[in-house]
Structures are given as structure tokens and as C-alpha cells.
Image 1 (cartoon, helix red, strand yellow):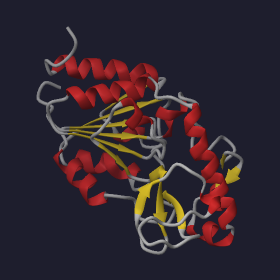
Image 2 (cartoon, helix red, strand yellow):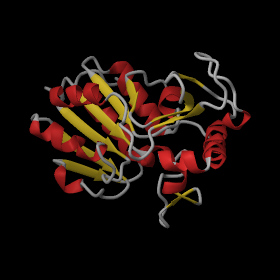
Image 3 (cartoon, helix red, strand yellow):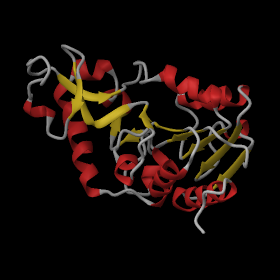
Image 4 (cartoon, one colour):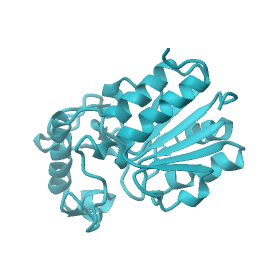
Length: 240
């Protein structure tokens, strides 16, 4: 680890689950009681706009009831103290990484606290209810805002930037992911091909666990702070 300079970290629903947020797909294949096809596809939005907006309004409101946990805090500490290049790529649409203090961060699947105008394409911070049909601040159109969430079938955000970082990474770490949702599930292959070490920190083995050089399994609130302590200590930037 002493030669590690560039780190890319992928986080998934498992890191926020310990804060009380539901994982994307529960054991029954549903998300908060809904089929994913009914709330997270362009077709769903076209078919029943109000149901989709109501669903994300509720998810947005739920963010106020949860707080970052020890895993978020540890990654924010790593972001502050790591002297090399660091990129946290999260599949999560919550704001817990930001609230913990992380700054070198990309939301690959969008953000609950952001709107996307279907008329002009503007993205903007948003914390209210879309069912109220607020006007887009950029173009003034009403009934045009949708959640700034990358639906199934849409292209994730900032993929070129992420792939560049993976190609330069010395270490790739996947935290709290299922290893089944692409393109994120393929990041480990890109990093390995570029010569990076790879580590999985997950509650249990993911679908892609065998692709990693090393894996540690257990709650993210235990494994992530311990790993951050180790890597900062090995680099000479740990607590004394």
C-alpha cells in the first residue's frame, strides 16, 4: 500500500443501508414496495408521472430522517487526508457522502436533491415536491421537472471521467455493492486491466467478488473505518 497514489472507490446501497435507507432491491425484488420497472424507467415516468414523482418526493423527504454513518465519515476523512488522487464514485442517490464531508465525489446515478428539466436539460439543486409542478428556474417551463435520477436504460453520469480515473488507479475499492448493476459492476475489470490492486468491502460476497484481489466481509461501519485507518497509517498520514 505504501506505493499507492491514486485511489478510486465505488460505493453502493450497502453503505447507506446502515443509516436506515432501503437498498435498491429488497429480498422480494421490490424497492420500497414498488417494482423497479414502475418507478425507475423512462416508460414509467411517461405512463404515470405522478406516481413516479410521488415516489421520489417520499425518498427525498426520507433523507431528512437519516444521518451519515461511520463508513461515510471514514471515507470523508480519507478524502481530506489522502495526498494523492482520490475519486469516490457512488451509485447512491442520497447526500450522505456530502454531509459527511466528502468532496472528491461523483454521483453516477444522479441525486435525489437535484432536478432535471425535460424541456431544457438544466440540472439544479431541488429539495421540495415535484408534484407541485414548480417551474424550471432556467427556462420557466412548468410540469417539466423530473428527478435527476439515471433511470434504467439511460446513460450514467460522467462515465469518461470515471474510466480515466480507473485507468490511472493504483487501488480500486468497492464498498457495499451487489456487483450486478452495470456499468459499475464492470469497474473492477477496468481497474484490474490497468494494473490496479482491487479490494471488496461488502456485507457478504458480491456477484463479482471473485474478480477482486482481496475481500473483507462485514458491516461497512466496521470494515471501512478499519481500512481507512490502515491505508492512511501505511502512507504516513494516519493519526498518531
